[in-house]
Length: 121
Picture 1 (cartoon, rainbow, N blue to C red):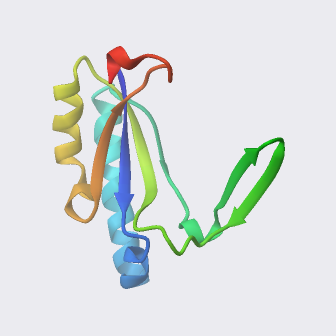
Picture 2 (cartoon, helix red, strand yellow):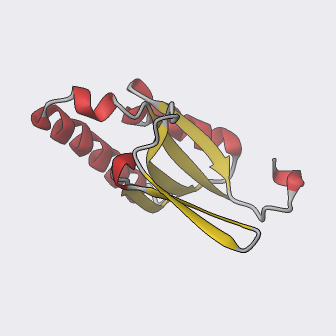
């Protein structure tokens, strides 16, 4: 079964690190990805830019609305993800517990499923 591990972090967190500290954190995340790849469970991994470069899009009544970041009301942002394929939810949680990001943010474990399928919730 495929799971997404979402790195959910405070939006201001990245600004508290020096460049060297940020590069060290990123290197740890890349090493973790290599470990998952060598185990044959990694399907994809990406780091996302800060939400200050993001845009939010809504279409209501046929009218599009675009809001550029940063988003003042945001208490957290998705900083990146790992897409893994493991047999059980418990296996996905065990991987999330080993993820270096769990030391400084929340790692949310979500299974992939069609949006209408509540049986996988």
